[in-house]
Image 1: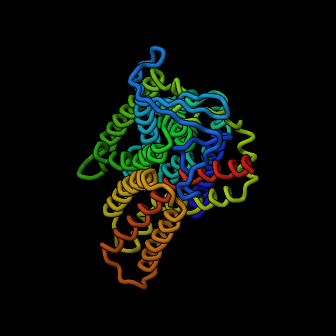
Image 2: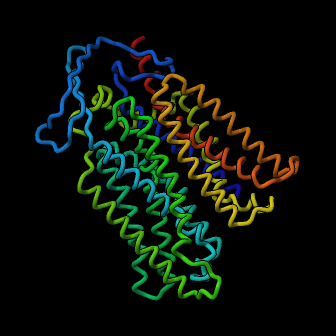
Length: 448
């Protein structure tokens, strides 16, 4: 278990590195008035820039998106026209749904492991655990090539690859139903887990890119938070699987459970294919006109961005901080029932604690993202306060587990749910903080 937790911690560091690398690709030698740096407490750079605004409800070259605002900006003698499109919300919705579904597929087997052990006697706890481990393994293996794909071929190609992997994986799992071979089903389930794990690379790395390409500066943290929260809520979707798959009790036979699992996997395959079709129909790489000046400037290539990340000490410190403080607690959530069992909390109660922790984590993430957008300039202070609050909740649970404090049910609920919700709120702000550091450092280099 310790090795698995360590692997998840390393994966979270890689996630943060990927997010940092992608943020470098949107840096420019200028920064518009409305883009604010938290490191400067809301003060803005104003290099050789003029700004004029006018309302517009027209269409752009027959584009079927309503244009909400239009701005003309002049930077170093070159005018850049910026617009925001209503369809940015469709882009965010369909990608967030993909993120939710990918997480639900990653955690398909854990919530119904008791039923799986009866329906497929050859699996056991090791096979169920390995299905989840494939996600971590393939993330580490695939993060660089998948991010390169998105950089070289564009956002649409990257998201299509992500949706294609998820759809292919879910379809693979239902192919063996045409036969009666449990071995074939096990192999295809492993291949599905590998595909879903590869898809996770872009589910975690793409949100900052989508926010920067489609959304104006004052909406970017919220947009990033929505997709990340939906990915986290995918665990709730998987926890609801027992509503469809019966447990092996009250006379339920193995064949009935197998029938329930088949129905579940058919539904998953249908959703996966529908998602891929929706993204094929409409998911452009970028809008006709950028929502801000920094969305339109020339990007650094992936190799250059990666080099700059590893050369910068401050970025690496924030990245490592994110990986350690976020990755390990999220891994602990997947084995929470073992920790709670020693405190007299059975599996049913542990499941409800897990569901509440995930739901409130999602709510705290959305709240943190929106507050960061509205009250800009205190990101560093917010991170420190959230870290301290999270540490206090973990220490509270440690005292309960150590026996220093008498165990009561309400204390277990509050300590576990509190540390998970506060920690995920910190993760959302981290996603906004890393690009801000990148922009700040490069502007210092340029204007000095």
